Image 1 (cartoon, rainbow, N blue to C red):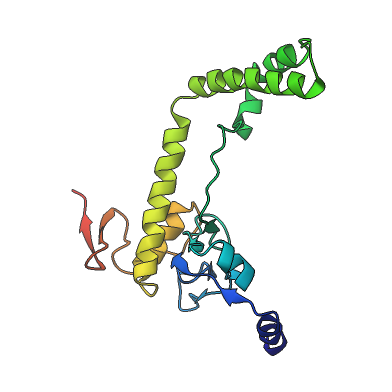
Image 2 (tube, one colour):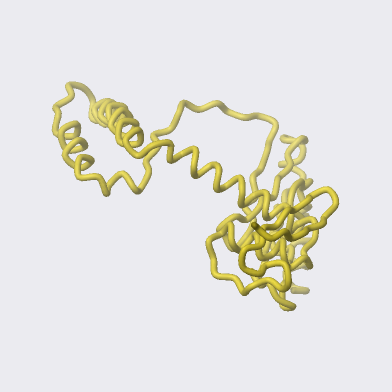
Length: 204
């Protein structure tokens, strides 16, 4: 570690301004071995700071990842066209492969790159049609991510709270040990982020 820190100093690297989650790695334990560490940072040099003086990075909640994702924000943000979105579950539909083959076998007159981009553009409509048959899956995914983000924010507010840890494990769909006391069968939990409190109430 001393050699690593010495290398950073000799390279005149400096930490970027940071926002968001301070700790970037949890060991996913709900017991006394619960551990959080700040293992990830972004470094820069004078040249970068001079050219992009407003650069900073944001540490997000880890969700299902081992480490918190870090997103860099710079002075210039280039706007891109909508990218081709593909969901893995689409290939399970029996109609998907024939639809893709039908488009890909179609002959497009022009340069090879023009032919590929035209076919990819046509595939967007296939993907949209297949998604529409699956219901509002994107909404459900975003809803689940929102629950997980909220649970991990609760954990960030009190990393020793076993009920917050248990809730975060449940939102990630993992098997967690039963939390003490209030997690008895039939109990519902009400979490207050502001007061950092929790209570249990039995269903009738």
